[in-house]
Image (cartoon, rainbow, N blue to C red):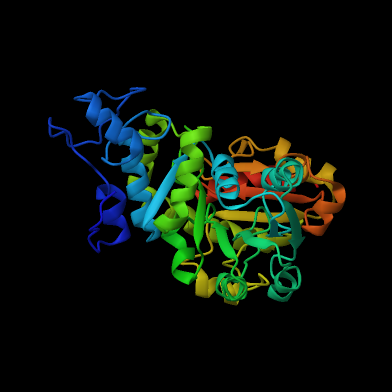
Length: 394
């Protein structure tokens, strides 16, 4: 990766950072579809495999297109380094197995994405790595959960789906006082709206599948941070192989080029939709960090450039009423994916968080009347009309 990164603004980095042109001088980033690379001699092959000489070896852990994506995302996050993975969940798994061992302990938010909870409870637990889940918004609870064997604080902010805001600076100060690493899932905000590393976090995780792609096309993930920490993630990836494909990396590079203009426009749409929902007689409550009614509104103003593009709300009723809204949508896509230019709607209690226990859902504040909308680029008036069709039937 480039050691000397110019101090360009995000919109410039998003289209220029990381590109390495071949001898053909292509203007667009090249897509290298190859499983292996040819060496000039046996000696060079030996040097490449040992790491004595830089260069590509095998596509399980090195590919020029993937490297360009890694450098570009690292530049946007203000990170020294980035390791790309096959998905966001692969990134979390790689981070944990690279930095934790049997007997280690994680303190994590009780408002994590459902698959992350499953990973910690049902997969990492088999290796002897344990997790304590605490209140997302109570730094004192995080400190109280620390054990001698605690090695990692893991959080995502805003949370999925209630958009709760964790105090990154406060949690980082607590963790570092005890020699604990802090990893932040920055999926909802992206580096355009929030930079956890600048607030003290050690590592940033991404599901590039979401806003970084932005058009629901491919899967991808990444871990960003200082080289001394990402190096361990790379070693895991080299052996275990949860690898980002070159084609997906190429698509994600194109997604990064429009990330800033997309997420800023989607956040503006989300703010308008949130205000409309908050005034709706069939809506009990709206969760959106850009609303003054949000419990962590003041904190969000210090951490995020805007409220983001995710709006969750509770209808007056339970599952039946929530499903009525979903089933009457003709424009909004009924899918659990988010970050797309097309607006999506989902019922978290029966989809993204359906595999966790009812008790865990209750602890995370996810009830049967909750709906999550990932706002896209459509006209807000059309989104309102689509939601009104179902809301009017409650």
